Amino acid sequence: MTVEHIDDKTILISADFSLKHTFECGQAFRWLPHEGGYLGAARGRTLFLIEREGQIEMSPCTREDYESVWKDYFGLSRDYGKIREALAFDTHVMAGMEYARGLRILNQEPFETLISFIISANNNVKRIQGIIEKMCIRFGERIPGWQELYTFPKPEALACATVPELEACGAGYRAPYVIGTARVVYDGFDLEALRCMAYAKAKKLLMGLPGVGPKVADCVLLFSLSHGSAFPIDVWVARIMKALYLNEGVKKREMENFARERFGEHAGIAQQWLFHYARGGGLGIGRRGRQSEPS
DNA sequence: ACCCAGGGTGACG
DNA sequence: CGTCACCATGGG
Image (cartoon, rainbow, N blue to C red; front, side, top):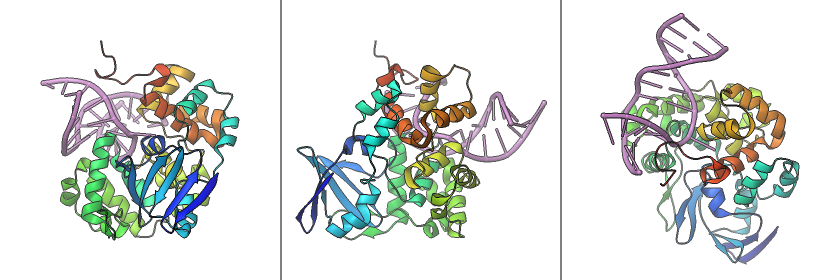
């Protein structure tokens, strides 16, 4: 991987990094298409990324922004070649990897990820994005700059919010969960401490929060707390497990065990490759309902 | 009108 | 422990 310093506000990098797959695989909800690239905000800063001739241009981004924030946020020091080798024995995962080449697991902010995936329960991506955007405008802070972008609300802001206010953002019946979890975090629940904890213990602690079950906990651990062995099981992954690896009547508990034994410390990225590929139409696994099979 | 969406909760056995 | 109706909202 190479890093070039174009000027004091532009960085050009060459890496195994696909913006489309990274931002549209469902791990994050606040990086949106903009002028041929993607625009978003994290850790108190805005950033625009665009692919030019196989390289990624990032701006505004000083050398220090890159080294202290974005390099870590985009997981750019992680060696995906090594992960690929470790999972090469599985043809389905390899097919997903080929499809989603350049998909990188982000290191998002834990509180944002936690609230975002509480919102995601029994919901769809488009609506999740809208709800989160409204919450940021209402409870976040405007980030200085030309673009009108907001930070994700702090725990205090959501802890002090009311149910009607969050319902007005579209949160629906999840509003009390958001407030309840925000209060626990505001009262001192240390999300960052989960990073260094054993996976099982961290997951158990997360599941003690209102609105957080096994799937949401795994998403938070995988997308923001560096737990590469987390394996979120949603409706799609359950379909994949049943169709490709296990039998129809299998339960989630068995799926977890299977995934942990088969994919180990790389279960999370394997899950993303499979999930994203299946949603994109691969693996021969279609959506329910009527929109999948055009007659 | 019905089903689905990156599920979780509470009640009931 | 396991199962299951229900949950607010918008789009197909």
